[in-house]
Length: 127
Image 1 (cartoon, one colour):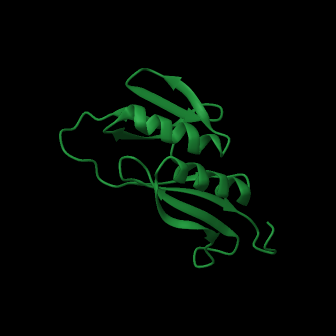
Image 2: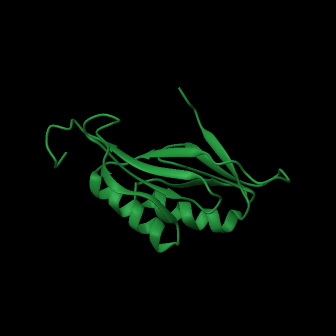
């Protein structure tokens, strides 16, 4: 349903370094760079960072990125922590969402709640 989403960043270079490292662990990369905006994805940009144009502070958003495996969720989380991100929730199963929902949550440089999530059948702990 959603074609793409974008957020404004107070420090675009810092946010770009954060997303280059963390989204890279999930197999996503920068596909377009216009200087004041950069788009990430696989085949076409679906997540955009842009330099802040509003005078006020940004409001927190929540973004969940698909991960191909539980290991990728763990790599995302580790990369974020190496960059100084605040841990919101360590990688774990979230059965309250649905069986097989495995996610980790961190705070990005602009205060957004960013998640990597892997969905599996939940039939085993190794999905």
